[in-house]
Image 1 (spheres, helix red, strand yellow):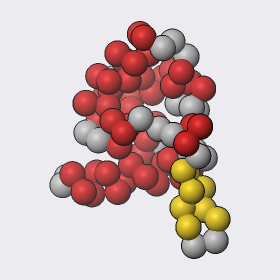
Image 2: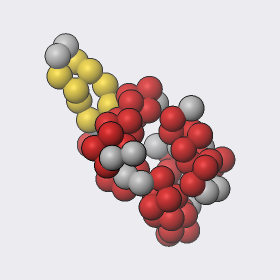
Image 3: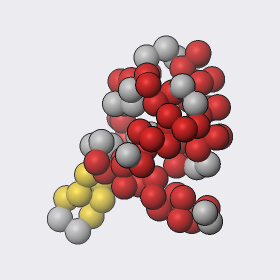
Length: 83
């Protein structure tokens, strides 16, 4: 899958999970709860970063609405992200 398509697909779940919302014609990203940029990239890379981030900041991803089950590896991440 081309990177642009992968990134595009990554925005949809962020909308579904309430990380981005629309106000009229504009998308609004709440900077108090902004997702880390690696969340929109390659699933293997996102999974590796998530694992490292969780070690440094336990529970921080859960506070963003990302369940612990999504952090167990690439396939679990893709399952949660894309459904």
